[in-house]
Image 1: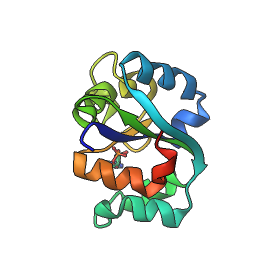
Image 2: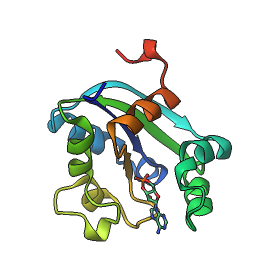
Image 3: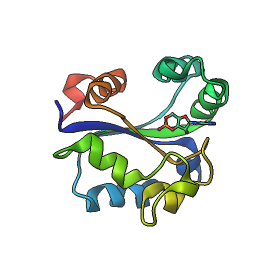
Image 4: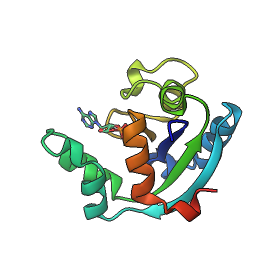
Length: 138
Ligand code: CMP
């Protein structure tokens, strides 16, 4: 469905106790949270999830970080969910993110940038189904 996107509140943000603030931010921006769960990814899961980046120089760092601690995975719903969520989270590098975006507010670096968002509707469908079964999307 094109009105869905997938989000992760990454290990840095969970560790810094930003889950509540980011949850409120999501709701304030008008998203419906279809499902959410707190998990700790295995290294293998992180490698599979970010397989698209396997040839990038930061792949090892990224998958180590994403499997380093608890994160919250979320399926979100709203009109134009993918584009709007990317707007709400801001640029990948928090130093380049606009004021008021989640990454500007809660992230410290490019590698540890607080949140993830799908980059297309096609990937949103894949990413949601990577972590959630259909019966969990309520
Ligand atoms: P995310 O939206 O989760 O998608 C891929 C992630 O790779 C990205 O956020 C960043 O956290 C990370 N990333 C992108 N570029 C770099 C980089 N040059 N060095 C380290 N991590 C990066």
